[in-house]
Image (cartoon, rainbow, N blue to C red):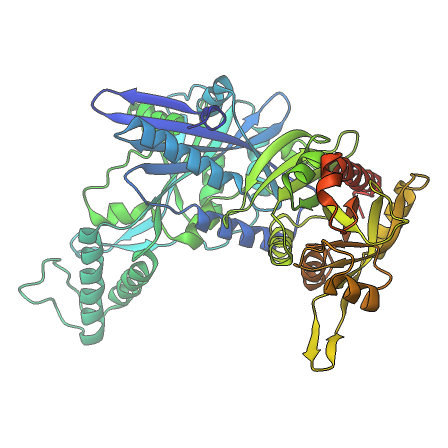
Length: 571
């Protein structure tokens, strides 16, 4: 594990009892807030991605809202813990949990808590008073005379806005919190069998109206009355809900003084559950669960009690609400405008990277790694990726990154070979049009070109023209792109370019892939900017030896970032 990964990790090892590792994230909503239904849908997808029971480590994560009586504001924190008999496995699982939690929906911004003192404070923000904690659980309605079974009432699948609850919390005169903890799980086989048997027995009673036979172990009596029919529906629904991926849930409301009943009751009403004050004698254990992102309610005992804290994904989404809107969260953060810069070569990448600050690494689940940095003196963040040469790479990454990061603009930046004498080494070509030169038909009469071409974004051309006005050696001209390296002026390819693409002033290998993928994306403004490092004439070793490649890459990077700096982040 690297030092960067271990930063912000609290690890506690108890001899003979295993190790726990905790992580934390600060979370804020962004402005403008999306449609609430859209935000809930995104939260559900995010929550589904957190379900993981691989390996032997037990993982839990929690959303926690804590008030500040002095400011009247509420802070939101995501906390996580991984437990394992092995300390290294616990730490590794916690780091992986943090990486998954960081991929919050677009209406939020999250950043890891790297300071251990801050993380300690987030886990235990205040002392919980005796009688100062309550839990919200699902409602169970006992069925009289039916062997201790009960009707199960699922949580509301999509309850009303939590804004009133956050307002209640913000206005509480003492420190208080609301926390919702989830543990990815699967129902134990024995409990699943119990559930199947109960569903089967209630179905038999509801259909036949019979008393149970002498071999019935559940002592269920009463025939096909309305309560039996409700029980049948309840257990058949539970079997559908909890037969596969589930979460164990703890919902706690706590305060440093006496807990006002309306706070826990309003949360119970939002969820369709019931609030249960914790007895003062049990306060310490309940408070320890909050401090440790724990869940101490036993998994053994009456199966109905097991189901009381078991939720499926819709129920988990209803209970595990992430912040939305701005009022009590101190004003929502405005998302910084994001532009993407792609390069093929490492030296091109470094020419851009050295001009950025506050670099952070982001990893797409498909494997793509980008560094995101601030363009100094601007509101822009720039996501930078080196993708290797070729049109296929360029097209695939452009399509992936446009859907993942949703940038305001995309640039492909690097070096190219010049096709005209008047385009000098070190000059920069801003591509107004990109030809794909490989399309055509080969016949006995020769090659018949079937050109494909893409025009550059008009808006970005205009911005580039304004930003680079007066700069020497800047050309706004078409370029040609394909996967064949041109290295001779008397080759078949050189003659083909001169015949069919006579206005192209440079040749490279990625622009057509980028342009085609941006075209498919629909509304992604794209611009290709190239520095001339050779003349595609077989003399590349000489020009490289003279240092033209890094100089050309540097000029192209400077030009691209000058264009980004001038863009309106709100456009």
